[in-house]
Length: 333
Image (cartoon, rainbow, N blue to C red; front, side, top):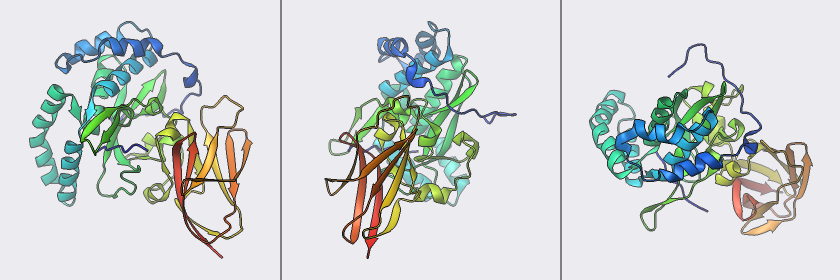
């Protein structure tokens, strides 16, 4: 399992649209290849770079895809910057003016590092996506809020720790996260590893809300009333939830209490899926698979299991060998 280290326009008369279900059918091979052609291009000529990536396309989907791929495969995440910004946010958590003053003084160093070393934190990724897309005539905005991951499982309500983007394509709003798409920081070797994850490009809002909580709730792109407390208490999802367009919907809490011998039902929604095949899902604890019953009803998977012994269990759900979500269960008599 990979460890991902990340940091951290309001539109009038805003109409928020749901994601389209045909994204998996689009062929992005051409914008992907264009992004590769301009790999390593200097950020000192940002308008020129945006033009080179997008001018061949007649639709915003391909234009934005080329921009997103370029940013995600050319900009590395700086663990040291992440830690520094996080420390300062906590230091000045009760003094927003002091933090703003420090942030303003640090901006020059921050952008110089991005410009020269192509290394940044989530804010830098979101800034590049925003600026390059606007240069290409694509309406978008930076979304600030909270990230919950295996690295930062319980964000603090007074310390927003992440930024991502919302983009409007063909009159519909979509969500994306270039920071998480770019790769991961290998702490043992103190280096960033590029490992593009396309699941964070125009991701399903229903999956996105499990790991991202925006300061402005309209940027969930959903008509629900999820609270911050519910967000924090929900199950953790991993990269493969995005890769496979699957999200946990029940139980709603990561911590579960159960009775020995009484079945627990888990439910997962398949998003953007046109296949009738049940994904190869396994339920695992202590590296051992459990013999759980799996039933598919349209886009819903139901998995039932009764524990035979009392105790505490960390339960992981895998697709293949990769975890997509986890729960903690206390089983009593």
